[in-house]
Length: 475
Ligand code: SAH
Image (cartoon, rainbow, N blue to C red; front, side, top):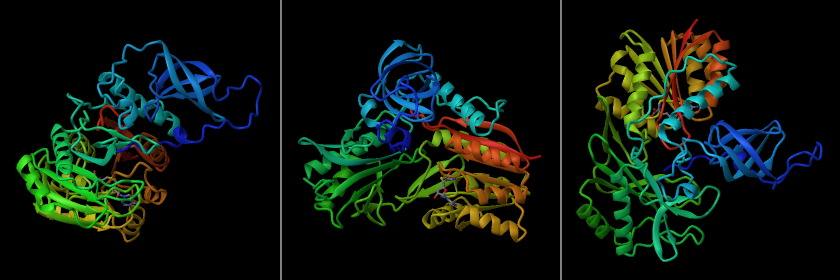
């Protein structure tokens, strides 16, 4: 799983600030009792203690919990759960044995229906806080029938635990690798392939990279499955140019794992948290993995970004289509287009699609995907959305529909301003962060748009993430 970004609030120093107030002030180390009101954006329980918000990992709404204060700020505190005095009926036993240490999931201790309710609440709370909207046109969240085994890709570090070679993730804020060989949110074939590749590395005595000494070869096993094709792409990230026993390695992977159609090597000698390096070499098989979303074809090179939960992506993009309400006449701008997925989804119903994306390789992929899908009305441009869109608008281009799907930080202000100037009929905002969605909506509402509806989609069950598609129209 991807690591959830450590949140500043949780990982800051746990030193108390110099006390400004009275002796009653709460201090680090104090034992407190808190009634939990809701789930916060990082999956923590949120309650109040002496008028400060209290953030407590692992606590659930309606629970009364005992906790030890770990950090005190002027408006909030964080505390560590030590006991539950009143337990929520939504509390379940987390099925994953390494749930606590891995950090990839945040809500496994909550039943799935309760997770879905909590995510709707997170969206409501964000809009009430950042857009001052209390009457929200929020549609019921679209969940999964089976909220497990959904991820189509894993990137696991290879390392040692005693004499054992394991594959896993670093526990948040540590250098301790947690073995997640059987991760329950991964597609089962991904676990199978990663496990077998690890075993073959052991059998052939191929040196595993050691983080501290910077010796060894194999750092990471990346496996990605095409849900429609059943094909699996394996990429070994290495710290050296050559893999010892490479031919034998390829042969054993092919014999043991017939679903593998690509074996690639990516070289990353840098001491950085980025997984992929610049250079990728095909060791055997097809250069790209075939995948489909609905009717749209994709061929994915090892580094290409692709949605991690294709089943839910189709639900999200159906909401995008509904919001865009295309008739075949429209010019659509797909800002932050990545490898063009949303633009290509919409292209058959549009007159023209213009995608903008910062990363040149992703734009290459978008162009190739457009060719493979026969979308000759889609053009893709490398650049910053907040720079290109204003330029287009200044040169008289007037999109009818603008779709934005920005990173967690939301849209840059110049982009929002350009949208307000361009006055498209419809703005479709796809967001993976309800806080920045709400803040940006506030700007757009003040700029003359109206919020028609918000459709949350559960792309990442068991985690606290929630994706939304919001439709704004010109007033
Ligand atoms: N819409 C795509 C990808 C969304 S992820 C999909 O559904 O698959 C957000 C994308 O925005 C990433 O590909 C990132 O590289 C790109 N990006 C980030 N900042 C950008 C900017 N300022 N202008 C254009 N693209 C940007």
